[in-house]
Image (tube, rainbow, N blue to C red; front, side, top):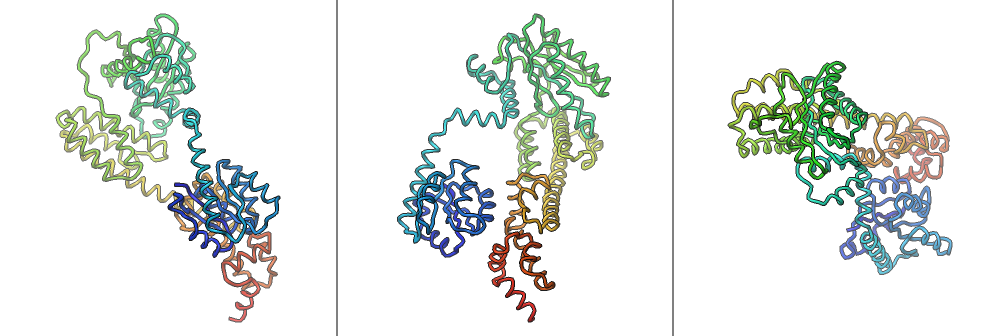
Length: 532
């Protein structure tokens, strides 16, 4: 299914096209239509159609000039040009723009459908030509940091099922370099005591950079990323002997510096040394196991090879569940939040292990606290953070722990939803205020307004249309015509002066818009207003 846009200032012509085009047969969908180039430009950016059918003679700029703009933005766009002019210059320009065919009025149904069939065929061929590797490379380039972290997280969780050569190629595509023969995983739990204040919000990023710099300065190759909650995971690579010992010394030094400079602490588990990146999950599992032996009251560095006797660790909290609950909160889905929580309590068997539940509750709270801090919301202000922590430690049943977690979710969803709605309304109000102050500026545009309120053009266009139920151009013209009507009724200014004050530097276009909107010319409107 391909999307189509119609551009013609003659409404009956657009109605005729809607009727004669074989939409279902050609698998086409009409998404928008416009009567002038300014409206067409905004709707194009809002709907991004695959095919544009445009008349050459439309208000403001010609259909060909508008098509040139669209082609510069999207070379794959298919354009069909309709004109009453049959000169070769227009024919050559249309072909140069990639127009499928130049059609002359009157429009014959067979001709427009044949042209659209060619357009559809061209789009289908173009889609088939897209090379998978090129698309993948573009995707990686746009989301490199996220893909790097997800790829390394997958390696941490399970052994690689591809060969070493293929894994090296994957790292090259991800712009990651691990040239040395020895690897080890490090998992670091950051102090969560200050997770609700400004220091807790800034510390994870500051610590990650400190860790990266320290590893690099000591001759290690490394990649660090945040796993569950406030846990920093590290892939460390080196070429020198006894690297794990030097790594342990480095982390111990970093712990002392963190205590001195940040007045906070961390615990770290170091897995055993492996000889390939594909085996890093084995080391990561041992690093996580080592962390189970760290004393929360006295954070320290635990190297797996130094463990003389292993005790059975407590089962770790589910990172998948934390991600699911977090997603429900961020998208305001209380029912889904409650269902996911109920299912876990019923099916996981943790209702008999209160300490595992307590650990999970603290990790979930830490995760949400960090997430809220980065979004400008301090959790302790909304949940009475100290009291919530105290309730978690005092809870003596699975039912009570379930109630605490549900209460956290309900309060956060309610607050974040209110904050989200308030933020959108404030942005639209700010945009409207800016429009009123600059309504006389003929260059006032979506770009200027969206830049003023700090949003991208496309997002502002969609948000404005959703909140106001009209397009930006329609709203702007309505406000300008409203001002013009007021000036025509209350002043003796000439029409061209009012046109300028209302933001139209072209009196002819002002007359066109005014008559289209009001149904009268400006002079006729003034005469009728004077007789009332």
